[in-house]
Length: 71
Image 1 (cartoon, rainbow, N blue to C red):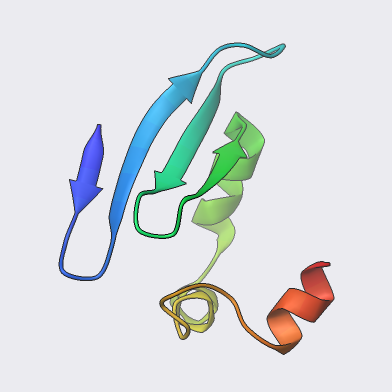
Image 2: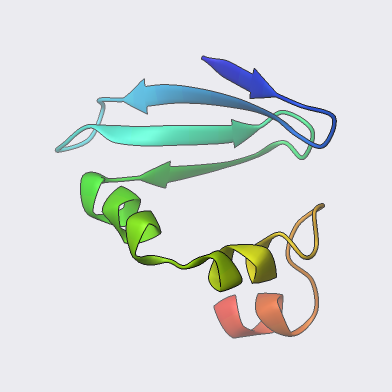
């Protein structure tokens, strides 16, 4: 499935190659992909709007301190 708006275009597919089904989300614009298992997807429901706003404050990907903290 492909989802798009004026800010992003992503492809969403199921990946069944591992030990369990995962959701693959691929950013067509950035060429980056990420995989989520069911628990990681449920984690999204734990986030409040403030967390989501911080994540999208840099629409072309994380920058600065956020990248340093993840790496």
